[in-house]
Every structure is written in C-alpha cells, then in structure tokens.
Amino acid sequence: MALRINDEIPNLHVVTDLGEYDLHDWIGDSWAILFSHPKDFTPVCTTEFGAVAQLADEWAKRGTKVMGISVDGVEEHKGWKGDIEQTSGATAGFPIVADNDLKVAKALDMLPADAYLPDGRTPADSATVRSVFIIAPNKKVQLMMTYPMSVGRNFAEVLRALDGLQRTYEQPLAVPANWETGQDVIVALSLDDAAATEKYGELDIKLPYLRFAKNPS
Image (cartoon, rainbow, N blue to C red; front, side, top):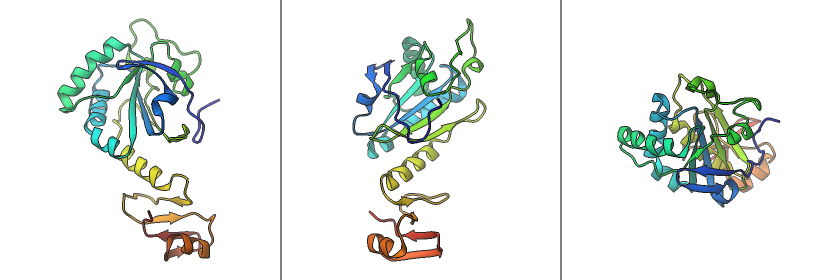
C-alpha cells in the first residue's frame, strides 16, 4: 500500500555516508526532511543538494534534521559531496542514504516493488526516486512532493511548507495560499465563532467558513 500523509514513516535501518541509523532514532524528537534523487553526479540534483546545504542554519532554527536518499553507494556519496560543496559554497553536513538495494525507495513507494537497477543504469532507470517527505516528531508523514527529472525542486517552498506545518501542528489551524511566517492563519471549522474568538482573539471573518486570526503563538 502506498505511503500517505499521516502514515508513520517506516522505521528502516539505513546506511549513510555518515554512519548507520534507525530512522525513528535518527528523527528523535525533531522534525525531519527526507529528500531523494535518482543518481549521484547529476546536474539538477547537484544544485538541489547544494540548496539544502545552503539552508543548514534555517533547518537548525526550526529543529529539523535533513537526510538525502540515493540508490548509489557510500563512496559515491562521499565523492559527490565534494562537487556539491564546490558549486554551492556550503558544507553538505547532512547524511545521504546509500540505498543500493532499493529498500528505502520501495518502502517509501518511490519505485515499484519489482524495480531493479540494470547494469550501466542512467538516472532514468530510477527517475521516480525524486521526492520530499516532511515528517513530524510523532514520526508521521506530514507532506510529500514528487518532481520530474527536468524541474529542480524549490527548497524555499519546502522551507515555507515546513513553517506552515510547524505553525499548525496539533492545533485547529491552517494556513492559506501563499502564506508566509507571521501572516494571519485560518481557524478550523472544528471551533465555532465563540470558541475560536475565546482561543485566538478577534477574528477576521471573510466568509462563514473562512475565518482568519492574527498569527497566534
């Protein structure tokens, strides 16, 4: 069965260029982002992993760990990180899973169960392994994105989505289109007007079902 939002991430044992981890232990009490790509030493993914490296301070501010996933091996990851750091000007201090056996890719439903890696493979052989998962401290998947080979992922949007998830986590709140940190939030319909006002103060009621509150703490 496919992995869905609010499913618990499988507690896989993974081998990375920075050591071995059980995913649940690695996540701990933090938020986590898993981001995958089809092959090391490829152009678009080099820019993406560089973008993640450049955002190291932003992930840390949000109590979020990041981990890459690739179907290449540990030694390839170590070599590729040199290219990532050269082109991005940032240290790639996050681990990258060596998913040679496709265990992680298949468990996270990024490849069909019968997929394999042919000799002399190209990125196209594992093209669907190009996803982002944001995971809450309860180990449940909060967001999933999958991109095609030709379009680089926008990690500013991943950061914005993370902010929205953290702002609304386990609260009767949502964020509107194009929301940015500090802007008003939407109060869920599970609270009536009286309860919403008591909890969040004066509401800006656009429609009976669209009610904004000043970005509450």
